[in-house]
Structures are given as C-alpha cells and as structure tokens.
Image 1 (cartoon, one colour):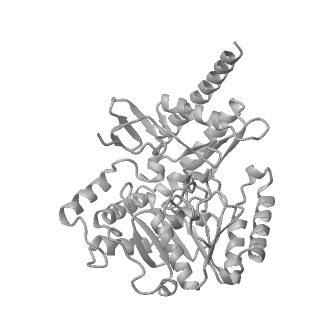
Image 2 (tube, helix red, strand yellow):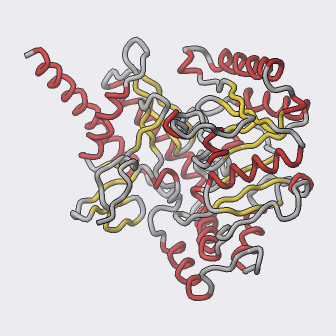
Image 3 (cartoon, helix red, strand yellow):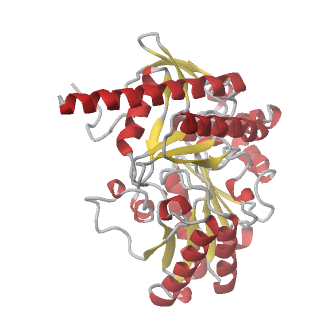
Length: 428
C-alpha cells in the first residue's frame, strides 16, 4: 500500500474533511480556526464562493491551454488586472506554477540581462527548494543538507534582524549594509553581481520585516553598480502585509518582482514581473513551461483579485493585523513570556526566548501543540524553530482574531503548566 513520504513532517495532526472561510473541519467532525491559510495561500479564505464559481465556470470551458501554443482569455485578462496593481514599470509578465519557479525565472533573467554570474541573498531568506532556489535559501540547512553541490555564484550577506543581534533597528541596518559593501569589496565584485534577492519580510526565516532604510540602501547600491534588485513577494504579496505589496512599506520599487501563494486562493500559479526593457534582454524562447498560466488557475486569480478589492481585504489585513499583534503582546506581558512579537499586517511572528535571550524552541512547540488542542491551527518557523507563525486569511474578522487570542492565551498557560509538571517529574 502506497503512503506519503516519511520525509514529509506534518505540522498538525488534522485530516481535513472540508473548510469554509477560516473554519477547517477534521474528518472526525471537529472544527478548527485556521491561522495558517495553507502557508499564506488561501487569501480569501477556504472555498470563497466567488473563487469556487470562477473555477467551476472555467473548468467547463477550458482546463488547459498551454500558453506558448495558444492564448486564452483568463490569461490575457489576468495580465490586464495585474497591471493595475503592479508597479508602473513592471508590466511584462511571465507565469509559472510555484514560487520556486518564479524565483528561478528571476535569477535567469537577472543573469541574462546583466551578463553577470553572481547573486547576493540574505541570511534567513527562503526562496524555494529547486536547485537554484535552494542554493539561495538560508533559512534552514534542511532545505540544502545532502543536496550538494548546489548552484555556484550565490553569496550571502547579513539581514538586519535587530532582535537576534540585540541591537536597535538602526544599528542592525548599518551593520548589514556595511557587510554588504564588504562582500562586494572582497568576494563578489559589483561587475560580477547580477542581482540582490530579498524578501520584504522574511517568511520561513521568522517573519522579520526589512527596515525601510535597509531596502533603500539596497536600491541605492543596485542603481550605483548596475545590478537588479529582486523582491521575493511570494508570501508578502496580495495584501498579506496590510499593503498590496510588501515592498510598499519600504519606499522602494524592485527591478524584478516575484509572487505566488495568495494570488489564486488555492491553485498553483506564480508570476514574475519586470519592465519590458529588462524582460526583452532575455533570449527568445528562454522562458516557458507546460502548466504556467493555466486557464483555471488564472480564472481563480481574477476572482481572488476581485474579492480582495471588493471586500477591501488589504485594509482589513492592516486593521486585523494590528488587533492581533496587540493581542499577542498582551498575552506575552500577562504571562511574562520572553521574546518578540513582530511582522506586518496578517504576517505575524511570535519568537519565544529564554530569559537570557537564547531561542526557546521547546516552548514554541508546546504552545503550538496546546493551541491545536484548543482548536487553533498554527505553524512554527524561524531558523531555530522558535517562532509561531500567524497567517490567517485576509477575510479574518475581529471575532475570529479574538478567538485566536483567547486560544493562544490558554495555550500559553497550558504550556507553562505542562513545563512545570514535566520538571516536577524530572525531580521526583
């Protein structure tokens, strides 16, 4: 009897029967409040009626039309619709299936356009699991271990994670930019560097927002040295951070933008956007793929974008994210939990630490498991696996935020109780 690979490690024990909005129902009939959104995918909630209707309608007309062979209306309409929300200069689009593919496409374009071999990424970044994307991923060695040799030409610079360094944001930013300049002076010369690739908020790396001054420093160096600034918006795009794009918090625009996850509310689709001039520097035929720009996925994306606009979900993400962050900080204060609550919009991380500042992965795991027992689905992230990730759908309301905060408060108390009980047993 065939089974799923044992290498796949489930974050929760739930087998889903069906789901609506933020409610997930296990096949045992139990209801859970989903604050994972499929790792930020189901932006309009599970099975939003408008998205389901668009998928069903398109499935009756055309399931697949390979978009180098033929064009179809959902693809062309999606280009027009994305053009309304993308930066004005980034109006040339390439579609693929996953974030990894879009990142690989951005890397290929940057190298082709500049004629340079190297790329600089930043500590804590996650860009995917395919060879090129995994070579650029530094959020955990588990994405790279046993996979060497990986792609050459990738160099790593510090990300200004102020909490990890124990510095102010200004100090961390100054250090990160100084080290980037040192890397350019000692390891990869500017004339050998094709791109800087960065997430506006580290995702798998612990939900650490990039400071605006850091992003502006990257933009200045890219302009000065002639390499591309690539923003990986796979997780931060489509309203997740309380702005439509994560980079809008930073006061800079990228040369290349990649996005996926929240675009379709649940179907595989990713996009790379650049200027027409930059995109034209790639050799004809160097972009393509069998399933990219799938008709049903494009229809889902169009419906998702309409729901985001009509239901004002970007503003809702900002408002509910603020409410959720305040609730998390209140729990941390009430229970005297050392750590850091951070993020933007509905992309929030709660990092657990020991009193001396060391990562407390054990407590994070206990709180996550107690939260699941209380009916709240969460995931864990961060390089040290000590960060609770909160990614509810953008349709989350005040009552659901308050439910989640209440469940988390009980989970923190229960986790502390289990810790005391465990220690009592150890000393018995």
